[in-house]
Amino acid sequence: MIGGYCGKILEVNLSTSKIHVADADEDILRHYIGGRGLATKILWDRLGSKWSKVDPLSPENLLIVATGPLTGFYPGGRVCISGKSPQSNGIIGSTVGGESGIDLKCAGYDAIVIEGASKDPVYLWIKDDEVEIRDASKYWGLDGKDTVVKLTKGALDYLNNKYRRFGEWKDPSILYIGPAGENLSRVAVVMEKWTHAAGYGGYGAVMGSKKLKAIVIKGSGPLPEIHNPIKFHNLLYRAYDECIRRDGMRRWGTGAGGYSVGAIQSSEPVRNWQEEWHDERSFGVDEFERRVWIKRYWGDYGCPTTCLKIALVKCGPYAGSLTDNPDYELQAYVGTNLGIFTPEENVYVASVVDDLGICGINGGNVLGFAAELYQRGILTKEDLGGLDLSWGNAKAFGELAKMIAYRIGIGDILAEGTYRAALKLSKIKGMDLLPYAVQVKGVAVGAHGIRSRMDYPTPIAYACSVQGGDHTSVARLPIDSSGSELVRIMCDSAVVCIFNFYPNPSLMWEFYEAVTGIRLTPRDWCYGDGLRILNIQRAALLLGGPDFYWDPKVHDDNPLRFYEPLPTGPYKGQAADRNEVENLKKQYYEAVGWDEYGIPRSDKLRELGLEDVDSALEEVRKRLKHS
Image (cartoon, rainbow, N blue to C red):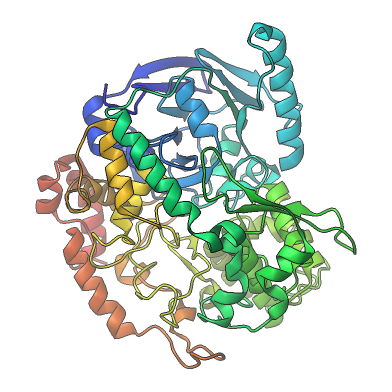
């Protein structure tokens, strides 16, 4: 077996309650690595021939939890969650921090593939080769913190009783959903710990559709053997040194961006992206540090950056609200995006979405969308169940988040996510509401604008990404540059934390060789195996279905709002330029092997050994070339 792998995949069918362990194919591991790449390969092999007919919320869909060869070895712990996305109808690889990936490998598995659906609530218990589907009826309906507390207590009671000869057990890793996932909200996340989330993709709804409340994992074995332990240890010290020297990141984490990305870069969503600039010093990281932080330098397994914090509102109307930093994305999307500029109110809304299991980005995006419709008189208090959704009304946004999680009133529409909600409300209101929907291919764009060119400098970042609005996986030229989507596919497949990748990107490739024994250069990856994964994801996105399909001529584009000039700030008047977008799209299409319609070319697919993908795309070619 290649170094860094267990060589085993755990297969679980919730419809039949059958569990078995399959051997991993070494050739697949070599070319698809793990994490996002491995999940993409498994999804395509099993569902590709019928992709457009598979409902993401049906038992037919797969939920995949995948580690990579660097899981447990590269500093910081993450795992990748994937499946057919209820948001984009494509494949999204969504990673989440925590120890679940390490526990899974120490239990002896590289990945879990879950199919089917249970009739009643269940959770999956994994303790090495002891794998069981257990009753979760007493956990169903619990919010995030209660779920973690009660599942942890139950697991520790069991372990300390059955395996008492090993002494006191540490907490297991838990991947779980909150009420939003249980009620099949497309903005629901798969959570870990009580603030970490695999947000993009809507996979909390996939777990909910399978009646799977949680996956509880405790591995007691060693990590797999690696190819070159001496080189690995030398690299580990270098990586620690590089990360520890990033003092600003360690002290403040991405939470430093809540003020600076808006005030300095003019790239932060403000009131549903109507603006991207603000100079609200009350939202500076020093204010968060002074007013709400109660723990600093918190990190996941083996992480030298420890960029996480814990925040608690200590007094006032939101006293008791508990969450992480919040990190930049939540500062922006459930802060400035909603007209909220105080740490306490931001922590309150962030704690609500965490407990409900709602994505801070996709959930915050749909909250901002609803608020702008209220601002413009399109949605009324009556539509909103009596809520005054004025900008900055944190209490109202918290209540609307609950309506979305439980699909109450208009929350039932908003739970579909911004794109689908815009389509439904457009029919109800008799007007086109898509101009207010800041998303790409059903996925909310990350909290990084493109108009000022000071944050994401390329205007095709989201437009051409195979993961839609995902800010962690953006299209960029040249395709082998360190920030390109092809390199991010490697990060998500290996699986590594990008915040420990940034200080020295070359280290990831050196780690990969030391662990696996396989030499791989960024260029070889970006023009070979990485491009293979990208093209399968593109094919799945274009095949789409069953409720709608993407047309690259229409949907390989930015949200309409990004073509509106910035109204305020030092970059006032700047906007995305349509001619530049079209020219860069053509260059990008050519670089990744797509034709003028944005469809992967047959010759490129055959060169990559993807003849089955080429055949499946015939229906897309007919549909798009004659539309």
